[in-house]
Each structure stands twice: as C-alpha cells, then as structure tokens.
Image 1 (cartoon, rainbow, N blue to C red):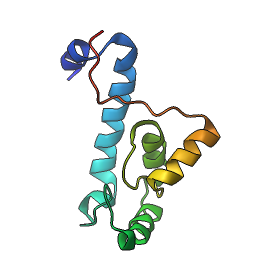
Image 2: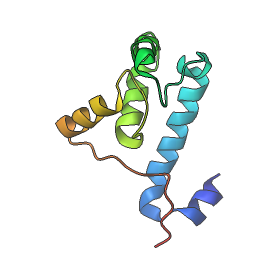
Image 3: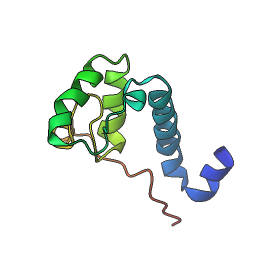
Image 4: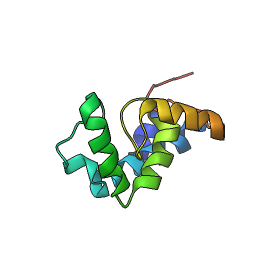
Length: 105
C-alpha cells in the first residue's frame, strides 16, 4: 500500500492519506453503521434520526466524527449530518481535506 501512496500522492499528502485510510478501515471493522442495513451516506429524511441513534450507540462515534470533520463531505458520520459538520468545521477551524483526489504536481 505504501508504494502506491508514494506514486500517487505528493509527499505533503501522504500522511493525510495514510491517516484517512487507517481511520476508515477501523470504522468499517468496528463501526455499527456498516452492518446496520441503513444508508448513512445518503439517508432519506426519515432515516436521519435512526442513523444518528446508531452513531450515538457506537463505540467509535468520536473517532468517526474526527475522521469525518477532516475527510468527509457527505452522509452521516459521528452522529452529525453534512450541514452540522460544516458548522462544526467552521467553529473548530478545521479544513476539509480532499485526500481522495490525485494531484501529481
């Protein structure tokens, strides 16, 4: 995996990419959402409350939120909607990092 990172991403981005991949892997393994059957990435209005309830009962809620504040634009992560995370990013002055786009410059 590290060889691919060296080829695809500039030096400055490698640490962020590695962190994002590690956190997402942990969330997928331990997080309650990935086996819930709910669509956390694009929930309907009625499912938002239910998705948030899952988040609040998950042992990774805070780690998931920390990940999402830095790397995720869409869906419910760490008990927050997209709009809630935008407000929280502004409050904490956390930039949204796009680690998934490849910039070879």
